[in-house]
Length: 237
Image (tube, helix red, strand yellow):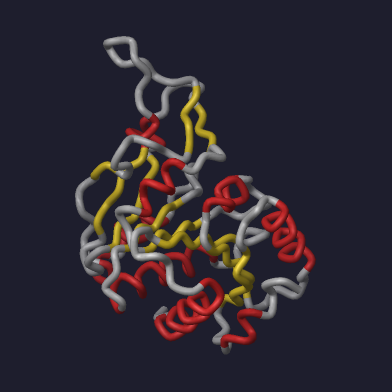
């Protein structure tokens, strides 16, 4: 499914809601839905692809659903469209991270194993400049669990290494991860499926995001091409 036209429209609308980011820092855009099945991961992936391919920008796609890592899997299973995934590389230039693994593993010298070692980044072959993250769930041991933290160090660091960071957040009904990181974003876009008739859950999520200090840019209706005013209709209503 080619969503290039829809992504061009979304990117143009985002440019009008926030303006251009300062050159010295990258731009952070989070996509989130109130419920599962709205198509957030598809929209996030297509937006990242569009900006990397057509605008030739350096783009990082962060898969925030650490227990259900689908983005790297989709790229890896479809090399005919996306190209081959590159080898695993560090996803943190300075070992800062947006999550913590507890209890921590200990290295032979007694120091804790860095959280950053659990997240890898892979270049996407057919989109120069695009990187996708993958949480190494298989590296967890015993009763270890992972928790997204309300800290901005990782996002501040990543701004210096990307023109755009697209954050694919799990739905609010399943995880608080998207709400936790939302205050560190430049824009947060609510995604709603075209056949969704109940607007109460998206409206409630919008209110929760704004209460947390998140910059809610507006609403994107998945699988429907909208003009810019329609996109902006959910921003503050």
